[in-house]
Length: 156
Image 1: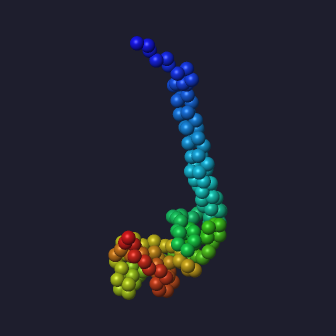
Image 2: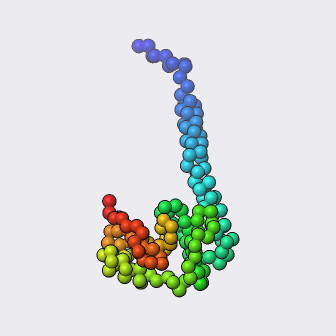
Image 3: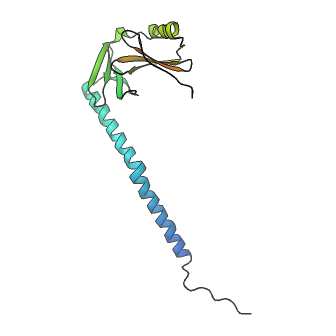
C-alpha cells in the first residue's frame, strides 16, 4: 500500500493562528469604532453638562437627569430647587418651602386613583412637575397647580 502524499500547499497551524489573530484585531477595531467610542463621547458630553451646571450653581446637590420631552436636570440647594436644560442653563427655580410631596401624593390618590409608590421631581412639557409612579401608572402633575400634565400605563 502506498501512503498518500500530504498536500504541500496546505498551510497548517500558522495559517489558522494568523486568521484567529486577524479576527481578534478586526473585532477589537469594530468594538472601538461602534461601541466604546460613542460611549466615551456620550460620557464626556454628560460630564461637560454636569460641569456647566456645577459652575452655574456651585453647591448643587441631588443632581439627576430626566428624559421626557427633552433632557433636563434637577437639583437643589438648601433653599432652592433648580431645573436645568441640556446645556446646563437654568430653566426655572422654586423655593424649597414650596416642595410638597404629600399634597401631590394626596391629589394623585383622590383625583386620579393612583397610589404613588415613587414620587420624584421632573420637567414636563413646559413646567416643572411631580412624577408619580404607582398602581401601574405614571402620572405627572404640574408643580404649581397639581393639574395633570401627562398620564400613561406602565404595564406592557
